[in-house]
Length: 212
Image (cartoon, rainbow, N blue to C red; front, side):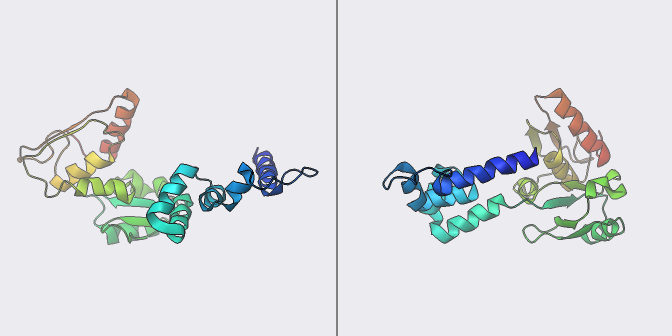
C-alpha cells in the first residue's frame, strides 16, 4: 500500500510540474500556470495546506513567517508528560523513566512538563504506577488558566474524557475526584456524552489513584 501511494504521489507531482509525458505544457495564463506563480499556491502545494489557510497566514505573518509556520505545523508533535502527584516531581520522574530506557527533558514551553526524546513512556512500569499523564502543553495549560483555584470551587467538565484536564485540577487541589480536596468543600463534576469514553475517564483516574 505504501509503495502504491508513493507512486500515485510521484505521478501527481509530475503532472503538477509539467504534465504527463507527451502532454503539452500548461498554457500561459491558465489556472495551472497562475497557481505556480502565485505565492500562496506555491506554498499550499509545497506544504500540503489548503489555499485559504495559506492566504490567511501570508497576510498575517508574511512569506517567511508563513512558511516557518507551515513547516512547524507539518512537524510531528512531541510526546509531552504531566508529572502526577505520585511522581516525586519532574526531576525524579526523569530519573525513573531513564532507568526504563525513556529519555525525557524539561519542556521549553511549559514549566513542570516533560518532553520525551526517546522511548515509549506508555509501556513503562512508571506509567502503570500513575506517575504521569501523557498530555501536550496546550492541554496542560487549560488547568493553569483556572489559577488560583479556590478551595470551594465548583467545576463542571462536560467533555471530560479521557480525564487529563480534570485530573490535573484535582491534583492541584490535592484531593479526591468528586469532592476534589478533603475538607475543602470543592466539587468537581466530570461527565461525557459517550459511555465508552467515560470508561476511559474512570481508567485514567484509577491509574493516577484519584478516587472518590
